[in-house]
Length: 110
Image 1: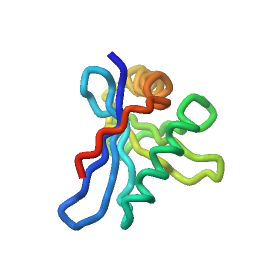
Image 2: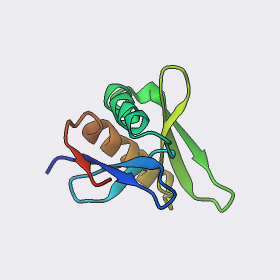
Image 3: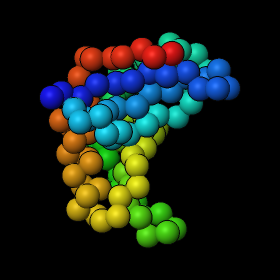
Image 4: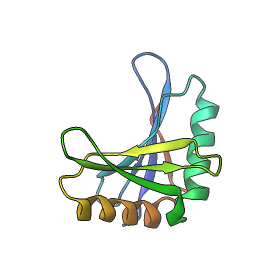
């Protein structure tokens, strides 16, 4: 099953999106956007950049968990992953993002 984007409106009125894998697990989540159009532009940026391995940066949090960010060509962060217990699981998340990030399936739940 293919992944999809889920566009939502937060309690504070701002918009954000998540990239979901085919099994419904969240792969990455965006920052908050004031305008819905900005959030949809963020989705377009994920669609454009997710297939490029050079756009991913991995890191380790202060509690020893691993995560990744997806960056646009201007080095701005487009989305952040969940926390992973192992580096291998984090790398698996990147692969899932590469596979699912180009999806045109956008589910607007805002």
